[in-house]
Image 1 (tube, one colour):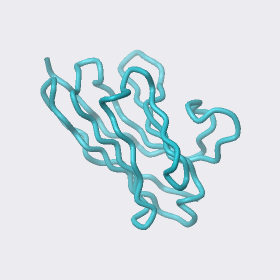
Image 2 (image 1 turned 90 degrees about the horizontal axis):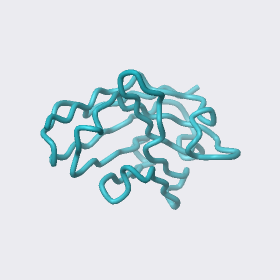
Image 3 (image 1 turned 45 degrees about the horizontal axis):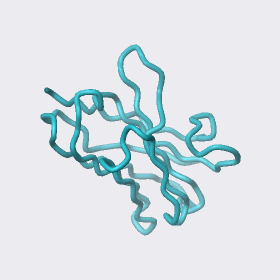
Image 4 (image 1 turned 120 degrees about the vertical axis):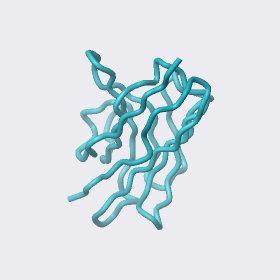
Length: 124
C-alpha cells in the first residue's frame, strides 16, 4: 500500500513558477514509476509528466515540455514537479500517482495509487 500526499499548489500570476511535491509513504518507492496528472473543471484528467523508478527516464506532455521538470528523490520518497512559465491554461487540480507500468506511462489506468490533489491557479 502506498499513500501519496501532494503539496505546493497555490495562486500564481502568468509567467510565474511553482514547485509541487508529492510525499509517499510505504515501502519500495523506487520500484514505482511516478506520474503527475491534472484535471481542469469540466475536463478529463490528463497526463502531465512521469518519471521511471530510478529517475533515468522522463516523460512530458507536449503542452508542458520545456516548461515543467519532473524529478524524484528516492531517499526522501518524494517526487517533484517544477513548473515554470505558467499559463492560465495550466490551472487545474494536480495529482501525483504511483504505479508499475506495463504499456504506457502516460495512461492514467496504469497507476494504482493516487494522491488527493493540489490546486494550481494561474491568473492572467
